[in-house]
Length: 151
Image 1 (spheres, one colour):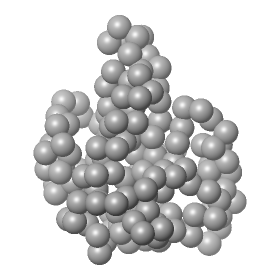
Image 2 (cartoon, one colour):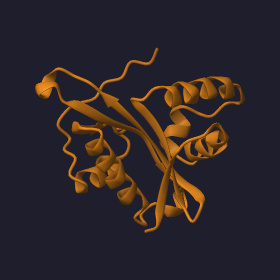
Image 3 (cartoon, rainbow, N blue to C red):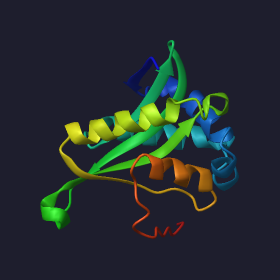
């Protein structure tokens, strides 16, 4: 699959909103609202300014089709290993099950290796059993329970 990867730009916010809206779990949990623009722009600028965060756009034939966010986290456990945290993994609905997600995740894992990470981690909503099977096929293990507190 001939995918290309580039860091997101401010002009990509409508595409990112479309990915969220097309994701039934994310859209229900965190709907895109008209007053989100300023907050999203501020977040995107913070990501771009921080060398330990990358928001990626995945393109197929010069058209955006997917996105994910990588964070690089230092830690003292695991002999001081850095962790690669993969978040907000989304693929356009019409391309799900066609290899985009697998290629994208393998690319993200390789990117974490390039950055010297000793472990790659992610969380996935409990309402996504198909996603959990997908991550397990890629070699991820459901080794921890995740908890969130909405503020």
